[in-house]
Amino acid sequence: MGLSLLLFLFADPISRALFNDNLAVALILPVSILFAANILVFLISSGRYRKPGFYNFFYLLQAHLMVVLTATLVVNGFGVLGAVVGFLIGQLIIFVMMLGIIIKSIGFILPRFINLREYLHFTVPIVPTHISTWILDASDRYVIGFLIGLKPLDFTREGTQWVV
Image 1: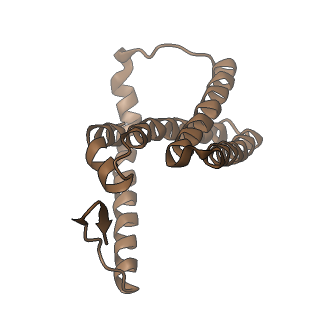
Image 2 (image 1 turned 180 degrees about the horizontal axis):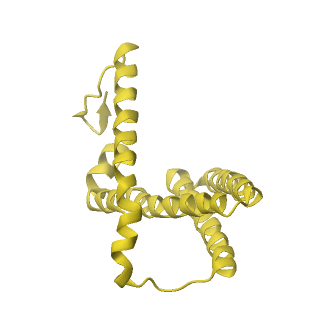
Image 3 (image 1 turned 120 degrees about the vertical axis):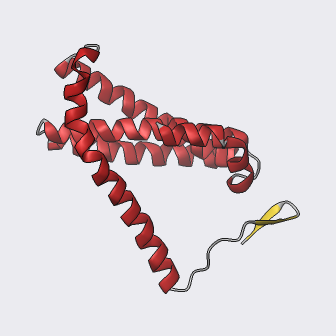
């Protein structure tokens, strides 16, 4: 959620730097990240309920659906915006399907914030693990890039294109 909010707040500079001033693509990116995170939670929860077929089906369906929708929109002339919209539509379809199945199987109730201490007691211990994994992954990529001779990107602007 935090990453999506940051990407939304900095959509204008991101659109200039990465998407050739295409603000629509930069605004769709945070929404796509939110759906991707929720789909990942649904996929992980399917493993918890010992339904590997559920996991495999939706994982493959998501991959194929996104490729088909993205390719269709790009081939029909929508360009990068079409690719991002196709990706988002695929995520939305998978999200709605998985949410429906999960609500049907386990139901839906509003959380009681009276039990917030118990919820935090369960989740807070895993936060450092995820942060350290992210730091380790980023540092590994940096060190490997340095060792194979890649230079850090120099984003200086010349004319209308970014020069690396």
